[in-house]
Length: 269
Ligand SMILES: [Fe+2]
Ligand SMILES: [Fe+2]
Image (tube, rainbow, N blue to C red; front, top):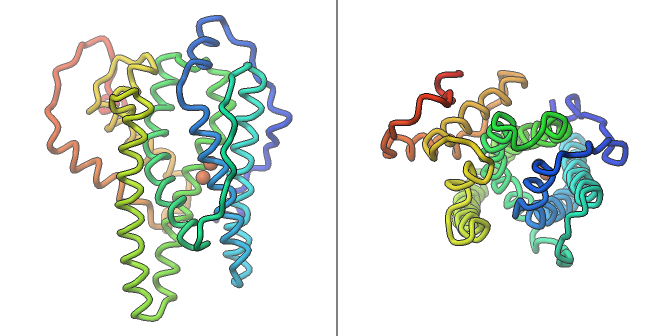
């Protein structure tokens, strides 16, 4: 599936649209571009490194392709910041994670968080007009590719687990739990930093100019996640951990009475 659904777009030939002054200011002042470029850089390195160590030719090819696509995301971002004159901090030297498999797992679980929230925030940015339609179109393949990546990663975890002998299976499961908790903690910290002491996911909807509360943002993420995943073979297990955590969080979140002027995610679904 992963190899068959490859999209051969080329970052160098993307025609970046001229933006109206307001849209330009909104895009260039988003505080996420350094983090986005560095996350893609790290992901590309870790995936290529892990692919080099593999012997199963099909899985090796798929993970190398995943690494290529992460590098391509970084290239897309580089072209974008250059075109719009966004100043980035110098990138830190990218280092290989000490164990190739653990590095791959950290990126995989990290993407399960990042992509899930990116789906919802991107839909909000589209609906509120934060990103003009031409820019939405430009970024659409990148966002969809992340959906494909986390679907692949989820299936890799299951496949890998099944191929391990019993004792190593237990060790691998322990690793999964450890990495998942580490990543969850890391993402919570990053959300606070990016939001300047506030939670960026919780406040992100305000940055994106959407009249929507945190509960609706999470509902939006769930709907978008299902919508994007629906494009792929229904037999493939879907990523469940993050959506389940979000559903649990939603269960405990109060329902806030909202203004009637904005259509809710639930109403559109
Ligand atoms: Fe990426
Ligand atoms: Fe990815």
